[in-house]
Image (cartoon, rainbow, N blue to C red; front, top):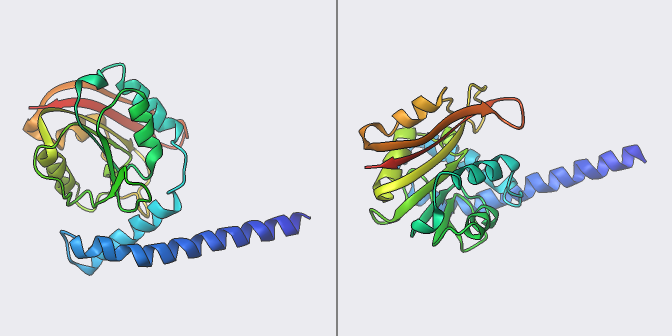
Length: 223
């Protein structure tokens, strides 16, 4: 019986991997032609990130994300903001959680989507016009960036003056695979935005609920 269960589990994992490969092959044609960076290296990077996104496309909203969002509501009145962007939303779960807390006009982006609330878009080259959002949220995305300053530039471009920015990233961990960047501290995270930061509302670090790494969380307002 144990051997049978292991065989079924292995077969299910193989089917998932095959489905992921097929979806990646089909879906890359929507991403790569629009890439800001045309190099083969960047296309390989996109494939890796796309495969990771597809494998997790049906995941429930993780506890760390719920904790982060609940923390945000202690510092920000969501009803005072008119438009919100969730970077790396993966699926509708994150969008719905924000909406249930009172956030308005919430749009997500990711490299793969099966829901109209999440637009297919590369965070390095967003297709939104300038100055569209007064609330930007990114949880465990910036560490996957190919060019983090390019992503920061895009966040600044699509943000309205005075927009609130909310970011969480893992820190002091082993980078590998799709996890490319360790910013090391909350201060280093904020420093990416340089003189564009007007006010730091919250900046903190803590051990992740997974126990294998720490996280840096920050909320700040732009000029």
